[in-house]
Amino acid sequence: MYQQIIDFCFQEVGTQKFFEKDKAFDELLTQRFKTTLERAARAELFTWRQDPEGRLAEIIVLDQFSRNIYRDTAKAFAQDKMALVLAQEAVAAGVLQQLDSVETRQLLLMPYMHSESKLIHEQAEQLFKQYTNEEVYGFEIRHKVIIDRFGRYPHRNEILGRQSTAEELDFLNQPNSSF
Image (tube, one colour):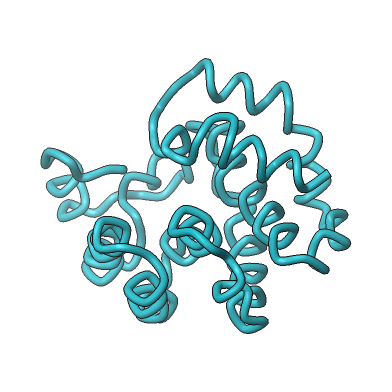
């Protein structure tokens, strides 16, 4: 089953689709993989963790698919902690060394980038520098700067029902303040 996720992401559509706002793509993911995401959210895909690509697939479902399937809702971020724990376990198990492309390593590490923890971003900076490329590492640095400054992603505040500070509102009015 996890091979369907890997094939979809790296052969059928390509990873760039996850970083674009595309309603048709969101609907495609919802039709094909919402049930898989629901199972992942219940931790039912545990057998996938026996294989590096299975671990990667579970992380992608929880971290990336959730953002597309539940776009513009709090549920888009509901699986972030679980995805991060799985990514941390994968890193500790040496999975990064077993993945053969920047794209696969990037998606395994994305839960670190999506975290709102300064400590996690300290780790992320090192991991992205070592296991991805300059462009991807640069995106991590941009995310880390926001977390270092605010301790959270201000662009999530409205969706998550959080009150924005005046400084965050000023920031959000700047071009390219969101991802």
